[in-house]
Image (cartoon, rainbow, N blue to C red; front, side, top):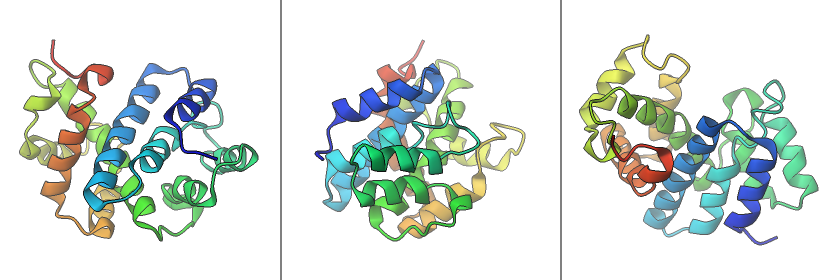
Length: 186
């Protein structure tokens, strides 16, 4: 099966209606594409992984991502894509072996925190979000409390990147799609 965005988008929208979940998928897609380009990897494949990583969450929250992995297998997605989707959730016990697995884990929670941090800033403009603001929000446990800060730190560590550089890199990647995310300013 080819890694085509159109196929991934159709799958995502078949299972997901929530606009915030769709925006999260687009943010993770952009971040994965940027990391693939940085590392000289298959940008289309990595972007597809980012787009579909949570496709089953809205419909099957208690079975996510295991249910999604079964659906992906039934639809002919490659094993490495399924591995990445399974390994982005620590509770599955699936190891993050490949660089793609590690990148997905590293960007997933961070995209949520960056989005939340942008939405509380005057102007709501992602391009104006400083790394230091994100780091400050990481320390505030009451802010975006569903975002797992330990996963963000562990993700950067597993990917082998400095946390501040990682945050800046993901902000820049998400800025490419700021209009789609509703984060290009008021």
